[in-house]
Image (tube, rainbow, N blue to C red):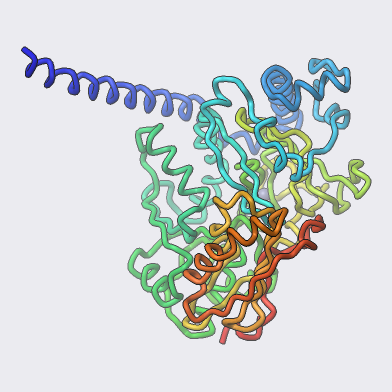
Length: 466
Ligand SMILES: [Zn+2]
């Protein structure tokens, strides 16, 4: 009897777990499929329809924030604003702007205490100002994003010439946000018919990346803009032959206009960009015209403000302020994203009616080029600091190909002394055992507020592309 009971108990437990996983996937596919119809038509809807959709989503997220997000509960009470008074995006002017430092100081006060908030998944921002933030995304919005992605896939599939069976390579690092999102989709959905897709580490030498491209023969290569620019320039300069993809798609940071023209000419490839951030996964995307972003204005409202925080006129450059209308994990309304851009008054010839944003300014990162053909993007350096929450800000400066200065600010020197040995060891793993890393405590990093600050800086660009 006891042997029988012993056999049956774990089996039934396993059965329950399998059923729960199965039901979770049914739910996941249900959410994605329910949002799918009409997604490809949304970019062509009229401005009136898009505004109505955007404002109804705004009213829902504001009500949700006032009920379940500690920061907004206090804010509405302090400002004596009835959340029902926020009815359209113009009403967002009544709420203050949020700085990254506010989220950094108390990330939990921006996370909903609702069931969705508690089930939400934490992601770390890339820390383009050297300050990494923890942003939660709830499962429902992550699943909706599968459907919203159809708007961007329409452009990619048109350029590839087919909707199914095309091949994608993602060039990134193992801590990349997208790999975490994929892991989430694996546990929450039955994998639908997706493009064939492989992942290659940016830490591989250029020759090995070229071999992988030639072996897989992709239609699309995704990666960070500044990294892809340097990679393709290096391939061209060293006459390393690759089978060029039809589309090169970058996000995260930018390419220079010269780099873009060079790659398009040399490799006969279409270059696209998508505008996203960990704070909001769907902000905008480039269409086949490729010179501006179409904004997902019903998913993420964008304001451009001048230095005083007032709305800048259309066409005038200013700071990008976002309000994520979809996410129910970390709720961000009127959030300073740290980018500079302008809204465009023009209408795109592609027929999409989504508002236009100019190419982002100042998003081209400094890349470290190491002897032996290794290209290191700042995102890879950030991974060293990912779990070291006591590091408030850092800067790595490449003075010579293998000589680096590391500046670290931790709040007090005792924490610095405790951490610095491990940080330098981890950096040496990336930069090579012969790298000379001079580390010091840098209180001046506390004062950094400008969006022009670069946590990774190369002073020996002449050693690149040789
Ligand atoms: Zn267009």
